[in-house]
Length: 152
Image 1 (cartoon, rainbow, N blue to C red):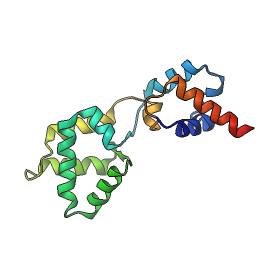
Image 2: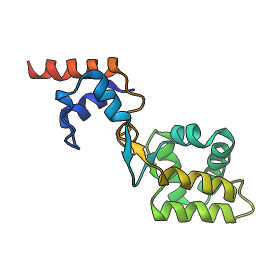
Image 3: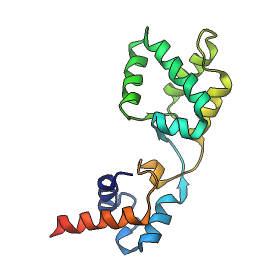
Image 4: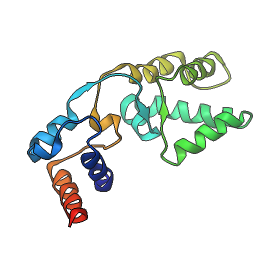
């Protein structure tokens, strides 16, 4: 949990949730309420958490193998290694995963691709959508204190 990222989110209030009027507990509950659909950016850590080690290991191994001959995959893998996200709901990403699964020389399987694609089809919370992680009341309090310090 990055308190500065949370501070920026609470200060900007991009979805006009009126966080400043909420109690600490209500902010936490609101951020973790699953109400958002659509594209979901994922880090490799998020994929590991949501689909498990075996599928994630096959995904990373497949990306490493494909990166040896494809500069776009090499670039994507580098982004993931640096904590950046990929949008699993993106049609190009989904097509690339399908291509990997259809290549018998790569370890990624069709069932792996189905599990990874399913990540983009669910409803998510604002905390997930904005990459805030597991927000707790103490994080909200610290972020609010940071906002207050900037206002002084």
